[in-house]
Image (tube, rainbow, N blue to C red; front, side, top):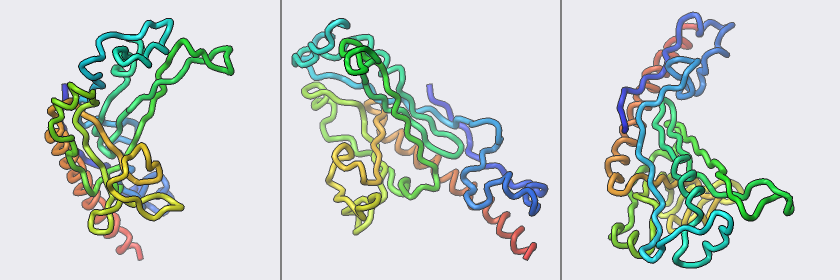
Length: 238
């Protein structure tokens, strides 16, 4: 179950702000300073989305023959589906959002280095800090008639979109060598676009969106307070 606690960044102690000790405290990116430097506090859990097959997908592929998944009525082997769901998480931490969107990969084997008959989980962890412009827009972008579409075509839960938009919201910022990507382009087709989708439990999209926004706002408020202390200290030193 989810829980909630306030986000509070570590204040810069006077001894840390001495000229010889500034490297101990990250004064130029305050958001990186956890309340306790030796621990990472999880502020809240969000329920991750579950992958659901369409209505005609009625069985799992045999564990010894996963290629049966090419049949429309078959899902991946049950053991790897369960492992994938167990690997998912969404944590709101005191300085960042972290989530795991695992992929399915082949186990190591003797056939060109892989075992084509056995799968394993490849973790795909994402971390976005609260001061990242990517969190400027956090929106519930769950498709219309999601329950019906999930029944007919399958789905992964409610979709929360993290976007850093420009051009009046028509484009996402992108990494070099591109400058921007049209916002209509999906994440999977445009790896250079600065964007992420987080899938949460079906029906929890708006609730999770509000939780993400609140965590971001609290972290930025705490960061602004600490930055003010640092600026006052530097002004007094100069």
